[in-house]
Image 1 (cartoon, rainbow, N blue to C red):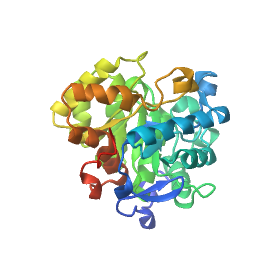
Image 2: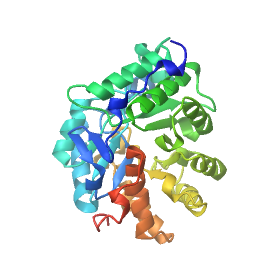
Image 3: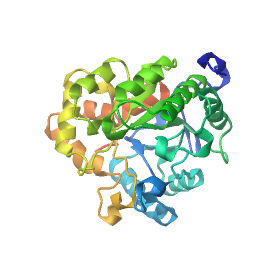
Length: 334
């Protein structure tokens, strides 16, 4: 098989309107009344490519669940989009336990990260073959858990490598077949244009694509271009000040909002190692709510805008549609 047309659309997998697949089963987006963290990791192991600190292992599970439970209590946190995929130490059973312990719904992911972390199944495999593997997992699940998003599909540099390009095409084909959305990892924010070009060339609609880590790229013109094309622009490393200051992130986000693209921004913290947890001295999963959102308010953002950024936008992205969640969050988010 050499062409995209060799991957059939699996019509039976098209998502029910407004329905999310979580690790605990289906969830109506209309029932998500509080904020959503659009790009996080709750259990992962990147030590093979990033060193021993880049893990959230079994010994960290209780701390992770406790953080989420506090955010549910204090800010109404309702949903976490967990983007640990194949080759990143994904642990679906651990995600289910964390969700149950914290009371916060979790959407699990599938796909492949950037080339350094590709498992053997990617080597030499055609996009159609890889896509079929993703569709099978999305349709049948693993251990009773079905992924609810494809990502984070990775590339580094201004253009994806050949293996990364195959994985991106596979993600697009699987997304078309199943109705799931695709989230990318754009290393240091670079390569987003190329990712979007490749995904849309494979037939995936821009509004089913979120380009990752754009808060690490100080280029408002690129952000506007991605959003104007219909893609979501991820400000998803909030709090990682060793990469870029939150003041710069706020400036870039406000520029996108002022350009008329508030409905295309997704916010999160991308906790990806145990040192980022509150108990280890980091800002944790709640840095977005405790620090960044107050700065947004101080900059003039009203509650309708904030609810859009932290709740309605991710729900629209995940489901591909507007719905009953179009109003305010009912005061759940403070």
